[in-house]
Image (cartoon, rainbow, N blue to C red; front, side, top):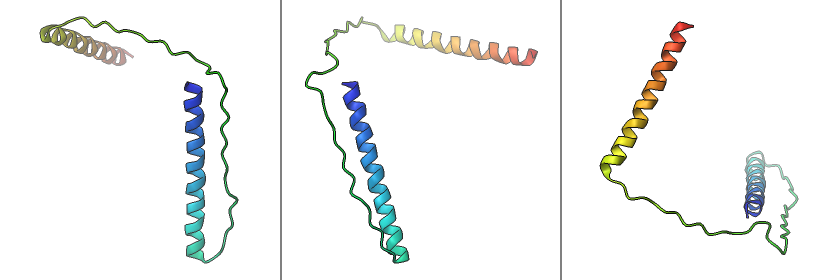
Length: 95
């Protein structure tokens, strides 16, 4: 599925780029009064009969939590981040 999605994205980007280039050249030719003929762009996609990946359903079990527990976890993460920044600052001063 990822291969199909990336292939479709590449085709869409290619056609958008070609369209933009054709529009830019059309605007430039109108401004300079010269004619430019551009070849049409064709994009073809071939898909396999069998998909490459299988889809598996997954259940996610969430635990109940309180606002106080969330607040404590966030505060712990903030404190650890601040401590890490302090340590980096001290290390840079020692160098």
